[in-house]
Image 1 (spheres, protein in one colour):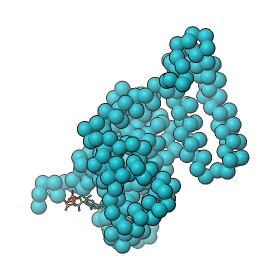
Image 2 (cartoon, rainbow, N blue to C red; image 1 turned 135 degrees about the vertical axis):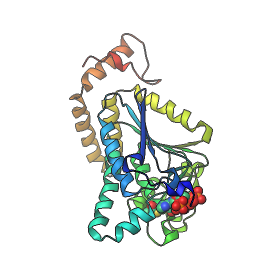
Image 3 (spheres, rainbow, N blue to C red; image 1 turned 180 degrees about the vertical axis):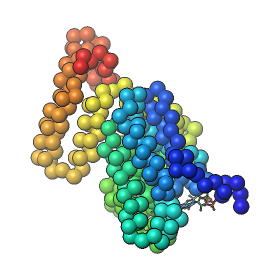
Amino acid sequence: MTDQQKIERAEEDTVAFTVENGIAWVKFNRPEKRNCMSPKLNRQMGKVIADLEFRDDVKVLVLTGEGDAWSAGMDLKEYFRETEAQGLGMIRKSQREAYSWWERLRWYEKPTIAMVNGWCFGGGYGPLFACDIAIAADDAQFGLSEINWGILPGGGASKVVADLMPLRKAMYHAMMGENLTGKQAEEQGLVTEAVPADRLKARVLEIAEALAKKDGHALRATKWAVRRMTEMTYDNAEDYLIRAQEALHNFGGVEARKEATRQFLDEKSFKPGLGTFDTSKIKR
Ligand code: ACO
């Protein structure tokens, strides 16, 4: 048995995070198991992202993986085999622990970026989809490997590919169990962008810093609006967007817009078409 195989991580060690200059870098932290998601990891991730969500020093959350994996999906031993051995109650509990943090991330208060540094399989598509923006290394590997071990892509994974990829590509991806590189995942709509591995962190940092400068309330309203749109008729969308803009006014939206308009029209210190206004001057 190698040293790595002997690692039995405590629950709190299954996720690592640091907060630097407004950016929370959260990591799946089971590199010796390719960061696959066990019940312990799911519980810990739920706690970590909940704790970070309302911290004033966190403007953006980045989700990445320690080592050479982003996440190798669900843990076949701890999430499936050991849980199933304990009956339906435990199966449902484990599902809830996983799905609930993906859901929280899908509707997170702060902007989120998946920084996909390596393997991303099956259940990993849940948190991948939950992040607002996904940047992958060119050589990352994405796979719906479910079919390769005799199950269907559950935990939202079928929905993720049907929503993000053209149907012909999604169907092939799910049925064949062949992996896509980061570049192919970009071409097929699964991620926002793929970059050479040695540029991955720099590119994510660039995006995170740009987001951190924008008005957080407007960002939250925007990301929730875009996510809601996919399931609305045009008329419902129009109505929702009016209500959401009006709700944004309760969080200083009127003051933000007045200040931005002043900086553009009167001060001429910025152009909305070319960048963001100085949010530090909003009088709320
Ligand atoms: N569940 C349980 N254990 C896993 C998982 C997983 N999803 N992925 C990796 N591991 C474990 C391996 O069993 C191994 O454990 P050991 O050291 O105790 O033997 C360790 O992590 C390292 O894995 P290797 O296979 O040795 O690593 P390698 O770099 O050669 O391969 C790869 C990486 C391709 C990711 C491989 O581990 C793999 O195929 N993993 C499974 C991927 C997968 O299909 N996930 C499930 C998707 S479906 C779903 O999520 C519902």
